[in-house]
Image (tube, rainbow, N blue to C red; front, side, top):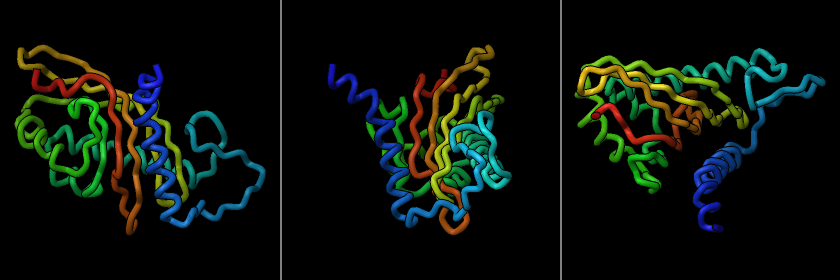
Length: 189
């Protein structure tokens, strides 16, 4: 029973550790905003009042996440790799429960699946929740719905649950860790 609980919460724990390390590395900067009595939330863009800067930063995280997913859908490894830290880590179904580090594991899917897919792929991000961690880190969690045409020519829809940890270096956002749950890549079916 203890092992089951540990294995269920381990990916979440790793994500929190990454965020804590980024905050410590950035000196714990919180943006230098004074508290003027307005309650701000880093949990959702829909639940509390936020200032324009916070909303804009959250929209920026959604935008770069959409760009990353577009690079994946288009089989564009060059763009994808520019948006990822070279030592990116990931938990994903294709890794069979193992923590993957670096881009080589992902390159295989780009070279053998995504870049060879000539059928249309449409991805939608549902219910994104963004946690801003200072000025240089953010975590986004969302449902990803992917529509595609399978090998038999039939339309299909699959869903995955994803979280991505972004770190801004030299003004550029990069993924340092992500976790994707759901079924393994199904575009090859």
